[in-house]
Structure formats: structure tokens, C-alpha cells
Image (cartoon, rainbow, N blue to C red; front, side, top):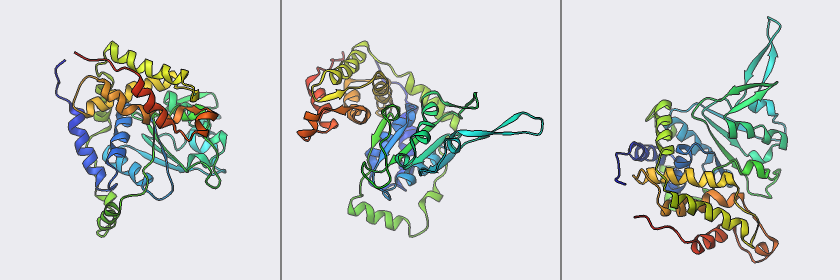
Length: 316
């Protein structure tokens, strides 16, 4: 199949160039975030406070012209703060008051500090693009993406996210500390004010939706589909894992592979795209066996072993 003109690639270069003015030295993480947005996925950032997670979310919202809301999750945040609530109106009926999640880009900051009820308030929004309040469903604006942050497991005041919620995040990332030269560049960038204020939209929400549609239409050969399914099945039979990749994980790998293919300038997926996105897309969904934990293995290591042992198709 011949390469075709790819609007995604041109826009992506401009978008990433803008965001890099604010988030310095994290090019790979920014690429993953943009790919997940193009794939209509949600992003989980697991990291210590202060490394730029909120700044990155704000930068993408400005450049992509997305309405933005943020909730700082604490134990006293209620589900209604997220989904909204109904109040009596003068006519004797009930009027819906939108919650914070009614936006294009929702930042759920320190999600694992919230109660399980507040955490689960996001599930319907993430999976179905709507919230239900008092038996009435309300559609979310489109496009819609959740960027959630969580403190590392064991940090004060945190609780584990439920498996059902982890599985709804397309990717999990960690920004980490910047390199010294990047940290110095960050300081210099702020000498003339907050660089976030200099960012401006590069495309409309309608244009972003068209790019997402283009990503979704990326060509996928049967052999590549079978390769993705084989990788998922390998996690389910691994002796190192108590729980392997879900069917939702298979769909997420497919969507991310399409997005990366478009970002690389192709309108079709190759096995290399699958290999590139596989660990980042699947690792957070797995449950390691006691033996694997005793051996000090990580989910990423196990997935790399599976990639090495699973033959990739040859495209002609």
C-alpha cells in the first residue's frame, strides 16, 4: 500500500513543537500523550508531584483548543462534583447542573487520593462518553479525554485504583525528573513569564475530531490483527502473570498502533508499531504472580520477553 498525504503528521509536528516550549525534555512522553488523544484514549500519569503533569495537560488543552477542567481529588470530593447533580427548578421539575467532567479535557489530579465512590464516578464517562445523574444520561462534549495523575503506590493518603478503572486507561506514563540541562532550560524559559500564556490553538475541535477519524480508518492487515491477538493471548498463558491482558487491552493496542502509524506518516500499521506501543499500553493492566514478584520482575520486562518470543508477521 502506498503512503498517502497524512494530515496527522503535519499537525503533530506543530502541536508537539508548541507543547515542548512548556514541557522540556520529555519528547517521548509528549508523543505518547498525543497518540492517545488521537486514538480517543485516556492517559494515566504516575509520578511524584511537581514534575509537570498539570502543566502538560494545560499545554495540550490550549494548543488543541479543548475546554479544560481540573479536580484535585481528596477524600472529601463527592461523585457529584465530577458528574454533576440535579436541583429543583421553578416549574417543579429538576434541572441538571453539569459536573467538572463535562469538558473536552478533564484532569483528574491525584485520583488515587479519592474514595472509591468518587473514583468510580469516572468509569461511565471514560467508557461511554456520558454520565448518568438521577436516571438521566448526559452526553459529554466531543472530543473527550481524561488525563489522570496518581502518586506512587504507598505515598501518604493514597489507595489503589480499582482494576476496572486501570483497564480504562489506554496508556500509563511516568515523566520523571528532568535532566539537568532540561531543568535549566525550564528555568530560563520562565524568565519572561509563564510560557503557557504564549500558546495558542493550532486547530479547532472539529479538526481534531477529523484527525481522530483518520487515525481510526488506518489500514490494518489480518496478519497484524492476528499478531496483536497472539500477544494478548501470550500474557494470559504466562506463568509470570496471574491476570493477562483484557480484550479492552487488545483494542487499546490496536488503536495506539494506528495512531503511531499515522504519526510516522503511514496510513497502515506495521508490526513495528505494535511492538513500540505494546509495553506502555498493556503493562498497567497486568497482575504479576508471587513468583515473578519474588524474582524482581516488572510487567514491562515480562512484556518484552513476550514480544521477543512471539513471531511478528512479514508484510509484503
